[in-house]
Length: 312
Ligand code: PMV
View 1 (tube, rainbow, N blue to C red):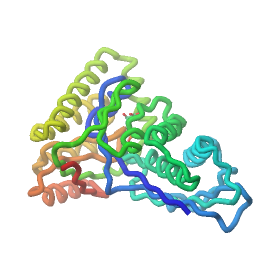
View 2 (cartoon, helix red, strand yellow; view 1 turned 60 degrees about the vertical axis):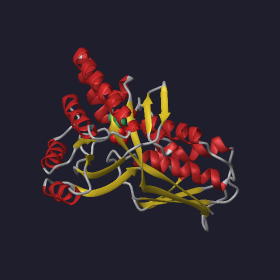
View 3 (cartoon, rainbow, N blue to C red; view 1 turned 180 degrees about the vertical axis):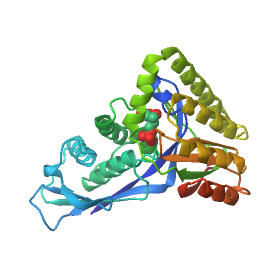
View 4 (cartoon, rainbow, N blue to C red; view 1 turned 90 degrees about the vertical axis):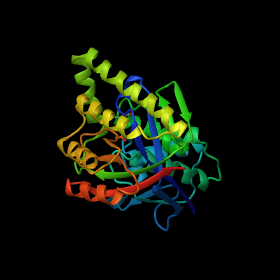
């Protein structure tokens, strides 16, 4: 038997603009994880692999799954990478605490936990680079041009400053961030949100380049603050990033209501996180006001509240 896990992630700055070559900042959320166990199955033929998760009712068998199925894809890619041909039937069990499709990296986290568990099963080492590359290949199946930030931050499990194909800079948070995350309820696939931005960009590239530039500048300012430990102005940058995401057309009335409610209740700043058009938002809060902001988010329709403290 082998066991592995992987964290969730939060994009603090720069989603969407990162697809167009601007920088983004993301942090792992170590207390929110996907777990995977691999054991020899007591049913099935030699080499057949069964995958079970509470997220889908019946289990599925790898040899019956479509190659487009993300779970089947990560298992196949990992087996190839590890040169592993199981001689017995295997059972892969997935349990994830990460809300699915909500912008917190559930897909990449499950992929990386599976790749790590298979590597352990094979007695092999899997570097963060390899885990990231395998998860990226799966992301590409569903979303033609992923920037790669999700798989990167989760595989390295460290805050990263990221520019697609150019910069992958893990860094240390020199401040402590107290965040409250709230689910807006709606779900939109990342590929849809990215495609929407793409088509609006194509009709007005100049305006959109301007938005991306402004988001990139906020991200750079935030990166400097996070390294220096002077995080006071960080919240304001988050709220400005949210306004620009709204201009890109990836917010929603529900997300805007949550961001407004958090700020009204005293949050230092707030923004949607991830692809948007639903999913989670994040508010940067002080310890003293956290309870008050939680209640305000719930009253504004937020659900699945998560409270995380990261950094020092
Ligand atoms: O919703 P998520 O967590 O998959 O984040 C997507 C982030 C985007 O910048 C919108 C897309 C990408 O590939 O970086």
